[in-house]
Length: 424
Image: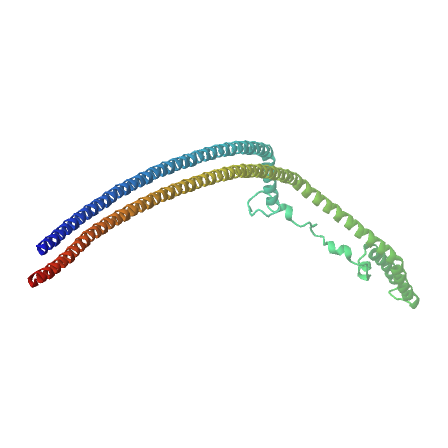
């Protein structure tokens, strides 16, 4: 009886232990499922938070890009308007400078034309006033060339007449340079006459004496001839000199008449030629004055044009310099604005990405913590369930062991009792 009771007790203990173990396992499984569900929910929330963060980041980046695009468009528009305004101002300045240059050149050209016209008018008037003298001089020169035999117009009246050499027909001027000699003395008419008369007297005396000449008579005749020659030599020389002087005088008078006539013939023509030369010189002087005045006017015109172009170049250079400086400043401002825009955009993007990263870090940190907590809870629940099941089994085993031991003891007691009873 006691064995049965002990067996029943063991069986009941085992059943109770199994029930307790199953309850502990079920409770642990429920906790594990709840922990896993909590982890899934935490993960879902984290995914939604990440999606929201990505959307927020995308919106921030889009807003930043839109802002950057607007700023860039505004800066580009401002730059284009600034450059266009500067180009328009430069074009207007260039046009004004070009118009001023054209007006200056036109005014200088008009002044030059007026000066040249006045100089030509004065020159033409001077030429007109001198032209008659020039024509007369040309006529006189032509006639004088005919008379001198230099024109080639051999049929002209008196052609070459002013170029004939002076001469006296039948007289050789070289005889004026002959020296007095014996021949000249013998040819002297006075000497010849007196000598002939003396010879005649001697001859008559001789004839009277029957043609006989005594020695004394011959000596007288010889002495007479000598004396006559001595006496008449000086007289003949004086007559020779007087005759040469007379011939020279007459020759000179003839030469003077010749030169006077030729001078009288050429002088009017020379005067006409001189007036023509003076007229030509006057015309040349007028032409020189015209040339000098025209040259001076042209130099003034060139200097004025050079100054006008210099002013135009300086103005154009100043306009170009100002335009370049304005464009440089505008481009510098544009570059600085672009740099600031991109710098601001970069800072905003860095801040957005930094916030996004920080939020992701927080989300992933929270998610990791929640996941770890859920896993830990599930593990703890599973461990607690297993421990509870083990405790229940252990308790059942202990109960069963205790019951077994009690039953065994009772059995042994019963056996001993029965043994002792049977012995009795």
